[in-house]
Structure formats: C-alpha cells, structure tokens
Image (cartoon, helix red, strand yellow):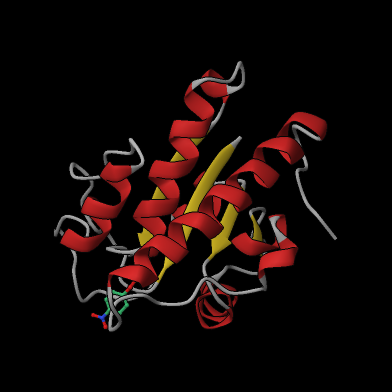
Length: 160
Ligand code: 4NP
C-alpha cells in the first residue's frame, strides 16, 4: 500500500500529514508494508523544506519533518500510489483533473478518515501559529482513522 498526501504548496499540511502518519505507523506492524510520501499541486515552493512554523509545531509532538523537501505532484504518482489523499476540495479537484482516465489510485479527502472534524484541513499558511496546532490535531485523528482502515481492509482502506 502506497499513500500520498497532497496539499497546495507541500510545505504545511501534506508534509505534516506525512510526518504524523509515519510516526503513528512506526509503532505498528503494518509499518514495513506501507510507503508514505507527500506532494503539492502547485509549484511555488519546490525543493524547499516545510514552513518553519510547521516544523516547530510538529517537533513539539515528536515529529521531525525538517528533512522533507517540497515537490509537485507528478503524472507518475497516479500509477505509483494506491491512495492519494487531498487536504481540501480544491486540491482533490485538481488531482481529479490531472488523473489519467485509467487511474488506478483512489483519490479521497484525508479528512474522510475523521469525518467529525469536517471535510477540509484549513490552509494555515496565511494565519497564526494556532492554525498549525489545529492542523496537527486534525491530522492525528485522521491518521488514526486511516490506520484503522488499513488494518481492517489492507487492500481497500476506503470509507464511504
Ligand atoms: P500548504 O500551505 O498547501 O498546506 O503547503 C500553503 C503553502 C504555501 C502557499 C499556500 C498554502 N502559498 O500560497 O505560497
């Protein structure tokens, strides 16, 4: 199972999602069988590390994302990942627009794994530090939901 987290810039939400989910996974027997990555639909920050505020907020929770480097979603991602999880509707729409007709990857909102928190992970980029904490809270809950789904349906961890 290969999981790709996607946001706009790949410097705030999706690298944080990658770090949070990888940390949760590290303690799990599924760890060796799940590949995790992140990417952005925009090209503004390619090659840059995550936003300093995202790095700081994650590190307070024992998650190190400082070594990640932003990249844009590639056409090959639609073949190389089984599950592509978008932070919000805009990014999901952009993924659907770019996906090839024979796309095997499943495209979903990440928050579909924690529906009580709402559908979208709000973009924290133009806000204050609390926004990054709120994003991490949501990511932790959605990561729990995703891992539970993967345990239950290893080949098709989808919620309706
Ligand atoms: P992200 O946040 O999509 O969560 O990485 C953003 C990062 C940068 C910009 C927008 C959102 N930007 O406009 O540069």
